[in-house]
Length: 328
Image (cartoon, rainbow, N blue to C red; front, side, top):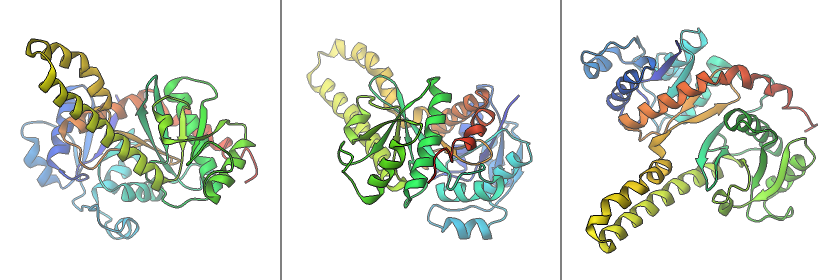
């Protein structure tokens, strides 16, 4: 049976919503261990029996991640990562500080051989299929060789998740032409274009709607803005549709139409999966969004459990052989 180590103190509504989400996940047959302030966690557990490791320190969203990891040795995220390192858990989930999770993972688990910087990959719904966005928030400033490695890791992830060979790779830019963009994009274009990856060229924001590629590659600053914008637009669209139906649809038809739209609403709701992969470290680490409620936490733990079942780490470990496939 697989076990997920959960950072119980990570998130805007932690530990209450995290603990509630863990209880819901347990009811779905998922085993978890909660890392955090034991007394506080117990106050929300009630009669539920979920293992706890006592790591009472909390790293807040506004703390400097590197300094916090150095000074908060008993933080909940380090407790969860230690469980994974010691093979007492098969994965870690945190909805807390992304920076602290990133730096803590490098410190405790180490990087896969050859990786310059780990990256965050998010799975995003598109018109025909799901696609991957990498980096979605880990590295704000990068060099071309780092973006190349993101493309390699994103391609490998697409192979594993979508069961496809030679996933199509696109570089996010402000135009399709190879001459577009900053020096970063121009240099990265040349690297990707001479690699063994299935690089199709530059892509724009509108291409998320038409599934032009399987993997969208960019720096973490741009990627995070893209991710949050897509989530915001999806929420806006559903709200506009709902308001329009209320105003213009014959009342007896309202319920069946809403039911018909329910799968779309679920697909566009970030709480429905609520998990991004931290790629490039020696262990399975999943990052959730900070505003996660109990339902979102439950779904994230289901998402994490599926990654464990896919034997994600053992299948991903050979990516190190591809990271230096071209001279960079």
